[in-house]
Image 1: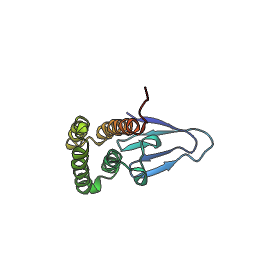
Image 2 (image 1 turned 90 degrees about the vertical axis):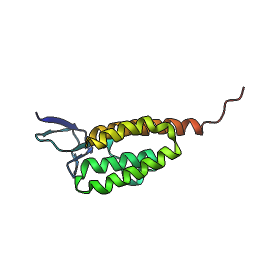
Image 3 (image 1 turned 45 degrees about the vertical axis):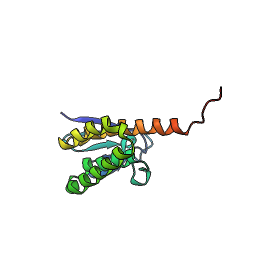
Image 4 (image 1 turned 30 degrees about the vertical axis):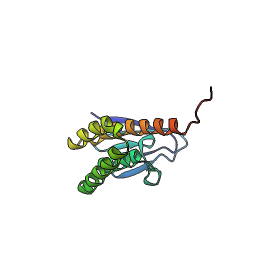
Length: 136
């Protein structure tokens, strides 16, 4: 079954290993007729924007998803990051278990979705810690 994707003007998407940008001033429709990795612009994390351990994990899984030629290297990077984050913030183990199960099953898209939950949790914790205490 084909997948229909509508791109907004100037929106980017990764299909396979290709980055595609809609340069038109109007939306365009793409029909993907085979199974390939697809990431919409809102789900793409650039390496220089991966500043936290959770974001680095997400970025590494993103690489696994779109570049299966270097999986051994990406898996090694992932497990090193996992060891670091668990030592730093043991509470994230519930997220890491789910992500790792997907990675071991080679379901990198699901691993990305789970990693996004980790990044959201990490953002909530960091935002909470940066708020000044309330005075009574």
